[in-house]
Structures are given as C-alpha cells and as structure tokens.
Image 1 (cartoon, rainbow, N blue to C red):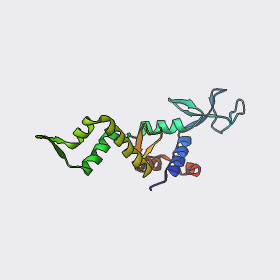
Image 2 (image 1 turned 30 degrees about the horizontal axis):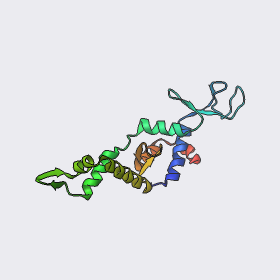
Image 3 (image 1 turned 180 degrees about the horizontal axis):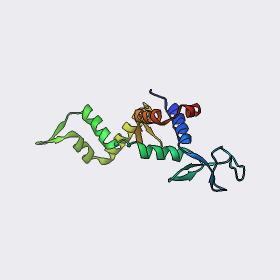
Length: 159
C-alpha cells in the first residue's frame, strides 16, 4: 500500500482507538458510549485490559507494535547493507579479515554513527518507522500489513 508516514500514523491511531476502550479515571469505570455514565465526563482515558490506562493513544500504539511485531535489528540490517557495498574481506598487512568486523571493531563510534545515519535514511525514505524517536524501528510494510489485518472498516473512518 505504501502509505505516507502521516497516513500510517492516522491509521495506527484509528487502530489504537479500536483496540482500547474509553475509561473514566474519576469513577474508575469503562465508558463505552464515550461519556461516563457515573459523572457524565467525556474527558476519558484509554484502557487496554490487562495493560493499563493513560490519557492518549501513543502508549496504545507502542503496546500494539511491541506485542505484535518484531523490531528491526538495526545492527544486522546495517551489516547487510555494508556487506552489499564493500568487498567481503579486506587485507591488513598479511591478514585477510572480514570487512564488517574490521570496520565495527576499529572504530565503534564511527560504526554506530553510520548505523544510525543509515536507519535515519531508511526512515526518511519511509521504509522504517520509529514511534519512539529512533529508539526502536519497525518495517513500514509490516506495520501496514498489521493494520490491514486488524483495523475494522468501520474504524477506518478515523484514519
């Protein structure tokens, strides 16, 4: 489907609303109609049973992705990218060594910077998505597939 990050975020929010329930913290009860039957408030938290409650849906989105998708192993994917760009081995003196191992071990700081720049570039190209400002990445197409498999058509009006 290849959604923009903005559209993907909207669909994730719609899924988060679908997968959580309105909850009145003051009366400490669910409010399925969107208004608390006890106090009449419409200032409601979101409840995910067995997980918790909070005021926004960002935590619901994070919970859904963490429990249903596997985060991208940046080290492994960056290694694969480097292996595709450079020769398999490099000769240092009389030794023939694995290029990736040499690069990573000679200058770990440079390696980490290059890996993070690679991840940022993949996110700019909308192949990767991070919901926690670069702490964890997921493949965009896997998120799209998860949404497509779980978002009810009726809830897509929110997206």
